[in-house]
Amino acid sequence: MFRYLILLALFSAALACAQMHPNSITVTASRSSSVQPDQVVFAVSVTSPLTTGQNDVIAALQGSGIGLANFTGVYTSQQYVGQQYVTALQWNFTLTVPLANMKATVDMFTGLQMSFSKGSAGLSLSFSVQGLQASAQAQQAQPCSLAGLISDARAQATQIANAAGATVGSILALTNSVSDASVTCSATVKFALGGGI
Image (cartoon, rainbow, N blue to C red; front, side, top):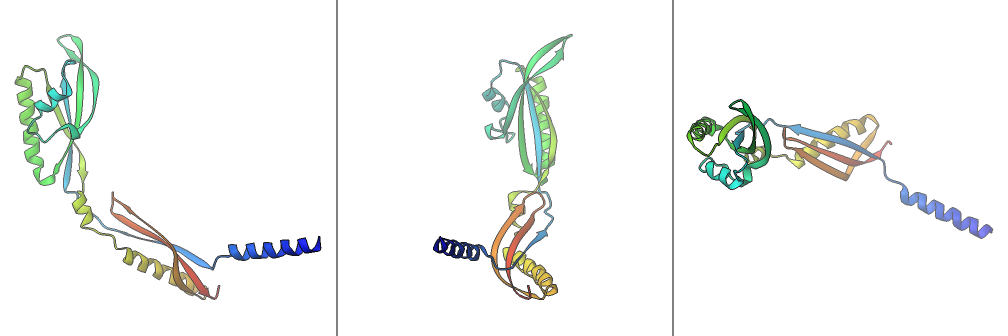
């Protein structure tokens, strides 16, 4: 029984040593940069009779830059026509164009509206600006430097460690992320500590 207790005590001590971690400090450093929007997103809706198919609508939009890849959904809608309600289909699309082409795109959609109203297919078109965004190229022009983030994190950790009489050692763990919306880069770094702690 005594031997069993000694073995249990040794095993517990070995387990406790295996679970010990060196002193460490974890800090998060982040950098933001402002990316100017260079694209405009249009929301486009085509209203059609119930008998109109998707291919018919896309064919009517030919030359506008809108295709199947721009399709976001179709819904039924009620329209008041000639003192009665008529059920119609509303085909929805989005189109992203360079900001520099915004006026030309508005002119093109205005022309389509007029041609739809004169046509016999019963189609009508509406459009609006849904918002502005930065293209992938514009976001990539503002790269996030992981080395810079680690340097910032080390400087923060050193300031904290110096206050505690310790020194910052090697990196134990690192996670980083990039937020596309504002191009904010961050890195959370765990450093080993030595010295006073």
